[in-house]
Amino acid sequence: MPKRGYHHGNLRQALVEAALSLIEAKGPTGFTLSEAAKQAGVTPAAVYRHFEGREDLIAEAARQGYEIFADVMQYAYDKGQPSAMASFEATGRAYLAFARKYPGHYIAMFESGISVNRTPELAAVSGRARNVLERAATELSAHIPADKRPPASMFSAHVWALSHGVVELFARNSPGTSSPFSPEDLLESGIGVYLRGLGLVPPDE
Image (cartoon, rainbow, N blue to C red; front, side, top):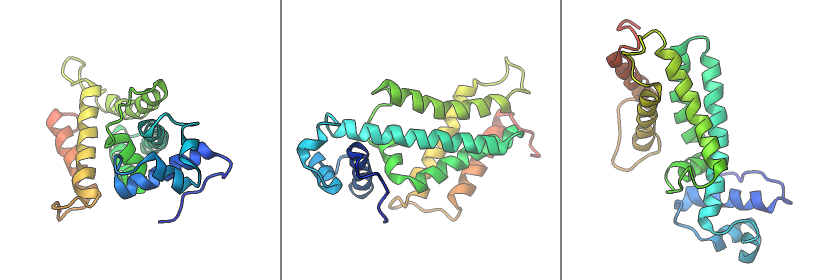
């Protein structure tokens, strides 16, 4: 895998890039700060000038991942406009695309055990990504009377969970899992079944 580029004068970012590479290769708990320092070409002591420990380093990788993720989700949403359905489905596909293109960030964000509430900055950017999907869900359900539609935050969370499950089981070469359908087809059909069941889209759409 080609090395990610970074400015050699930016040690903090060099350490994040090293961590992302190690996370991809060994998982979020499979490397030490010393390994990250070695890969970045600095002494272990230098790491502590920027990060308190490995979790702090992973949290920064997760924060940067959420920044990319939120931008990807926003782009997908905008590309689907003015169709609420197109925007909603596009955000689901964007989830799959992000997981494939940024595996180190994805693992740091969703599989490291790092809470999104660890820092205000991490909480804010994760909320920005979540809000894109909730806005798409709100627009999609606007034609349903308020007393008959589920909260947008609820069904957008359901679709987020569906997206995550498809990624984990079928888009990241998980051992022992396979499907005759592509992850994209699984997700699109699953979203369609779910939304029709809620009455959010007509049966013929």
